[in-house]
Image (cartoon, rainbow, N blue to C red):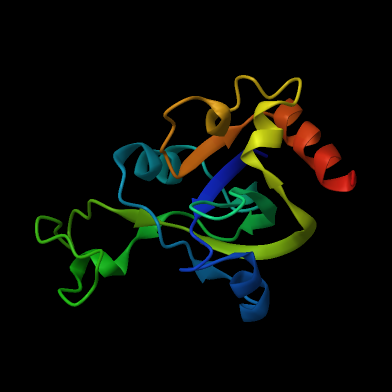
Amino acid sequence: MAYWLMKQEPEIFGIDDLEKIGKPVKWKKSRNYQVRNSFRDDMNPGDLAFFYHSNAKPAGVAGVMRIASEAYPDPTQFDPDSDYYDPKSKKDSPTWLSVDVEFVEKFDRVIPLTELKSSAGLEDMWVCRKGNRISVTPVTAEEWAIVLKLAESD
């Protein structure tokens, strides 16, 4: 099993939205080649991911979700009415992929980025690195355990 951190703006789609839906849904933010490659090459059904609220006050980890599907072509890349339309992408050779995710747990509090950055053992976590803007990043087993402990503490 692998661990991930996946960012989304809660005004667009947050952990509460995922919980309310109550079934697997397509992850929406996937217009980055590194993210696409992670979906395609490294992510598997059953992997766990932190749901990270970005551009929020506070920005931080809001809960846990599970990867619920293999990577598949993101249908929005072919829809001219979609914000994610890509006229260069072809149905026989799609550029963009997505995965389905499902709700696992909402934390009692959002663990703010400032707390993540100041926590021992998270210095190398992708989200803590200066200038990191990638929306889907791997998390080590050690980092996963540390963040879960932070979620348990008040």
